[in-house]
Image (tube, rainbow, N blue to C red):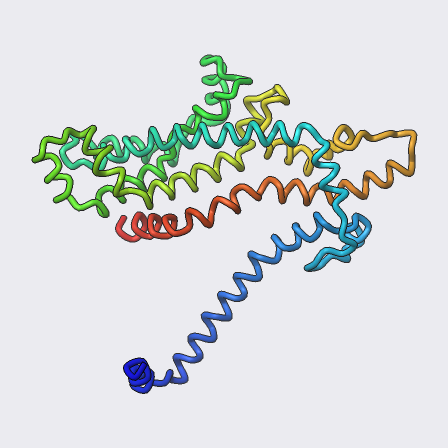
Length: 307
């Protein structure tokens, strides 16, 4: 207690310039927080608000006329849950494939004794800036007979060059070469070295890959829009896109054209349902991120600064 008191007494007061700098930094952080948090709070508030209040623009920060009618209608709409099921399958399966391909590839390219690794890296980097385009990709998928199958959402994005480069940089700079050399002296081959030494020391970058790939697959809809024609295979984001942009709400609400009163009510309810679907589509990633945040920050900083 005495030592803590002495430490506080020895601490120099902040100068005027330091106070101004701190005030500017905190002000900017608060501004960024408001810019990020307000749209999220607005969407959540609208999803629980009265449809008339949403249409009139009376909802600003908190719900007005609290109601769950929009969520009740969403729960009764089967395609939403079909899309959820498909998206979870695509995300989990594709992310597992991404890790299976990215980590060994990055490890191989991080080994200095790999012959021609610079040429391999040049070929990988080339694909980041140039590609065949959408039509050749579509023709390739057609020749491989992957159109309108679940594999059309999984195989084309098996590896991201950007993520592979980050992972390779992590392996090169964050895992001591002495540890790997000691394992090799003890008789480890490359396979055992990778699985028994490198991977256990790579939790931060693995968490980064899971988050990057997982969010990418969860939000993906473009490949589904091009390669899928069966609505039973649609991911959640494509269903959400059709609802938000194409106005496909008739089937969702069982629209009865003969009932004008029901028509008006459903058109009002449609606005609230849009916000509710956005909340449900974003919820899994919002739940996952806090568990990976610690590793995410560490892995990104190592891969970025030392790279």
